[in-house]
Amino acid sequence: MKKLAERFKKNDNQEETQVIKEEKELIEQKKENDAPALIPFESRNDRVGRYFKKYLKNFLFDEFSDSFITKNRLEFMRGVPIPLRHDDFQAFQGGEGLKILHIAENMAWIMGIDPKFKYTVKYVEFMNRLFNQRTLLEGLLKEGRDAAEKEDFDNAIIHFRAALILKPDYLHALYSYARVCREFYLRGNDDIYIGRFKAESMEYFELLTEVHPRFAQAYYYLGYDYLNLGLYQKAALVWKEFLRRSNNFQDKREIRKRLAQLEQPITIEKGCNAVLAGRWREGLDILEPFLDTKFKGWWPLHYYLGVAYARTGSNAKAVASFKRVLGINGSHLESIKELADLYALSGDKENERKYRKKAELIMAQIAEQEKERREREEKEEEEC
Image (spheres, rainbow, N blue to C red):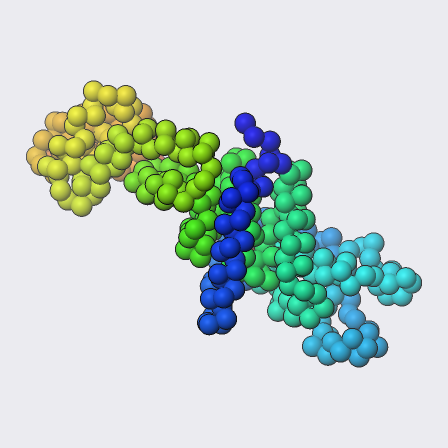
């Protein structure tokens, strides 16, 4: 297994050259069309920002003096609160003063923690006025990657988010942000937390393939995100694109093996999709041969077979299929409801009541979990 320090670096020199070439092409494209390749980062739905707002307590706010504003022609910063760490406050108010780069770093933290902060636009203007944007972006990226190598992922993600506010289509920040979101969800132990970071990671790998379509590694990780969601056909499609674009022979060998392993799951997925589309017979023809394979332990196989059997009048087979689902996934609500309906059709009142009651209990549990989730989110918002 590669060291974490290596995982945030490019895989080879050829890929790095490709990235540089693509960024030059993007610059030329923007000369012809000033519209940004992506909407501003701060305008997007922020799924994960709530987990970093705790760091706002590390900052106090003051304002630049009138003399400093006048001297540096920064009228747009008049009345704008300046973020200071507790140790910065005395130096900022007098004493030896603070370096502008240090103040810009504090601003980057505030933007990265809360992109929708009221003065984010002013901070961006301040940073762009006083610093070269390329230097700023490279500095934020280095800070983030150095933190990621030390597994200080909160620090890393805040810097990557700040870089994306400065330049939402910045390839290296998009890639690093998607990668570090992936680290968060792989290490998470709460379903909601994992779900948020997984969705964020997948969205930004998808954006990478749209904005920087020649960047191979985005397809590599996006394929694994799709695989984790059981989207086998989508995983195969993006991995084939990865094979077409990548020069990393080790990763290509790995993905070829993965694609070979996906052949049967892709066929099962096609069968499930046929059932979802109401093509019951087609679904049965595709799925039934897998009952005697290693995939017989997959509850979705039995569920979609059960649906197809029920819709084609093979009720006994449908009951058996849904019971197999419950033998693997005992609280699968849809299978329980299907069984209740099948027993109602056959006039078996006792079993119908049994499964209706079981469905009600599970729905009550789901409602209670949803209530607890909302309460937890509201508490998190209050603490922020």
